[in-house]
Length: 247
Image 1: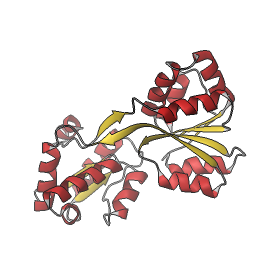
Image 2: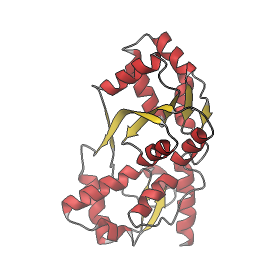
Image 3: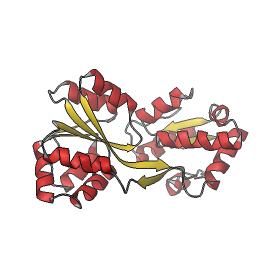
């Protein structure tokens, strides 16, 4: 992202804010594998490509691969967009349904609402999506949550601390967010520093990668100035650049 922004004439300050931490000892994943092989799930919802790969790398080390993937192929698989869809295909599994853009929890729920499957496993990422879980409960689904990895602060938090200080001090014109956990971690660091980052953000031009990020911003009382037509980094940079040139 930094190089893309520089090419457009910006002077970005990039602050890594998220680190993926794998769940090495993951008994929940093992229980999921056992239940999958016993055909106890009617549907498996795959939320991220990284999560699908990590989950089945773990499971293939514990179970017979042919038996495991055979069970997955017999089960309805719902991919939240192209990345988990691609990960399933790498396993030789053709997704039953793929949530269309913007591929939020709403599109996933719309797929389930039109189908009969109600015993559902959800491959999670970072943290549970309570909106998805609540919607599944409203549909009458019996849900098994399968966490694969967690989000943590980066090992070096100095750049994020500096970003929080700059935003609070008004030493920036704009900020770009590509994941809601970035906002969470920014607020966490700001609270530890004792600076009012939300007040600072309210004065900036905020660019959001897509609907899920925008919902998180609005929940914090912030309104993005830019949300790209497609939730991809290239579109975000392009539309942010166009906006800033007009501003």
